Image (tube, rainbow, N blue to C red; front, side):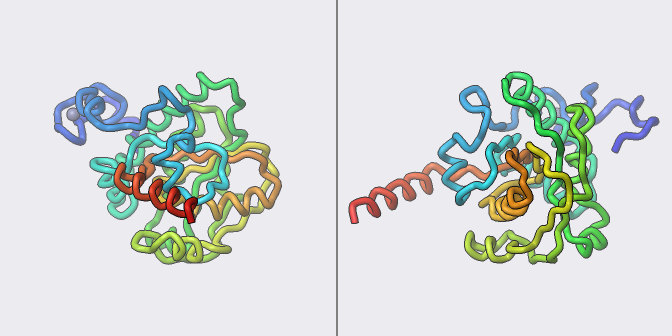
Length: 244
Ligand SMILES: [Zn+2]
């Protein structure tokens, strides 16, 4: 996180190491070279087939994500989670902020009433020392003028990491893992670092909707689009099933 002092020191770009006057440590050249999701057609990634087909029965209403889960974002997320690289979290969160601001401005829809970061279990909070989703949520909340609620949604079950598990195992791994004790907000935005199969986010949304929350937007740094080939296979399988 920036302190009063380093505000006066020019940033170095995390990729090319050249100095940059940007607020984030990424120069325009490198920033423009990276691949981001394109929102010219859709303002909700759930409308994109390569995203929608990878998420089993989403219980949330919309998804905004900054970039596909690939270099350098996958590396930055790992560094944020496991190597205390908070400045990388801030860098990605600021990019996500700009995207969300633009999409909310262009939308006729109302903004969420509150931002809820994906919680981590207190054991993991103790060993890691921080919750990376909360760091991202903190960058978003104030400029968007949306309340940040870090208390109401909690992780009550310590689960093993989702990576390496298949879709079914991911679902059972996170079952009953969350609790919500807070106001019945109408519209919430849940913040997470990355959405893969959506099993964890779906379980959170099940709990939130059970408590009367009507609408859920999910905002993440990364999402995992299905590869073209995998998409084709799924379509073929679907067609095959129809013929049976
Ligand atoms: Zn650069």
